[in-house]
Amino acid sequence: PYGPPVPYTPPTPLPPAPAPAPTPAPPVVATTLPSVLSMLAPNDELVRETGTSVAFVVHYPTDAAGPFVLDVALESGAKSYPLGEFDVAGGTAGTPGVVRARLRVPSAVAAGTATLVLVVRPDGGGGSARTPVRLPIGVR
Image (tube, rainbow, N blue to C red; front, side, top):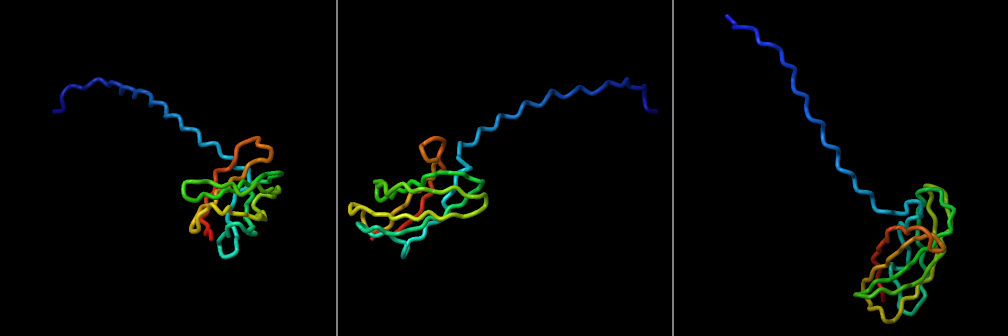
């Protein structure tokens, strides 16, 4: 009732899977450098032609012996104004630190909202810098 037996044929092996595409290398970021978390300024603003005392709060993702430098620039309109370089001490992984500075905004900067651009880099220029942190700030 079922017909003649059919001889067994082993299944054809599958072709090998193609090799996965290489993952692009992540951008080079200096993850061992401190990172800027925030800035504290009176009334969250800077006054032109006056030295304003500010504090930058930094975080140490790893133990960092330092020394490091915090470059601060102000962008207003289509121009960038360097405001200074400030020393950042070394620190212990997982802890915050404070960098105190006096920022003097030139009179050429228009009153209104501007952007602080903050970059932490190794002192002496060797190695790569952290990705810039951009913080809005008022200027009067």
